[in-house]
Image 1 (cartoon, helix red, strand yellow):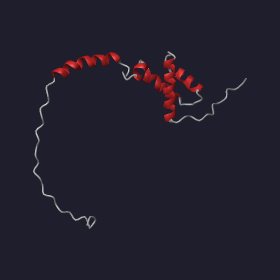
Image 2: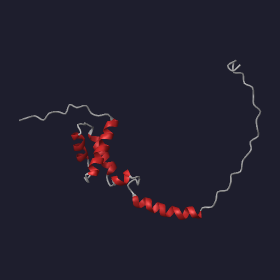
Image 3: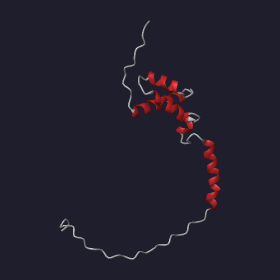
Image 4: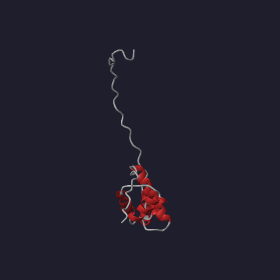
Length: 122
């Protein structure tokens, strides 16, 4: 029997691992694939990068139930909640009164003391 060869590539550092998982997730999104750890690992392996398996699991959990397209466009994955918040904040803003100008409180000025700085500023 042939023995499977051990992967001898070095494991990528944290920044590279995060970037690899991010790009893999974008590739899967563009290909209309489900973003799961096994598919992330396949894409990363095809890119000849070795990451700790925890990274693909972290990205799977982080993106589970999220719409990647909304994340890319700034809706943070929950467009209905954003629309509801926008609709409820408009009437509240219209009902808000103009803020009253703040009254200035004058402090009693204290006389400055001469402090000996040891000739530093002579």
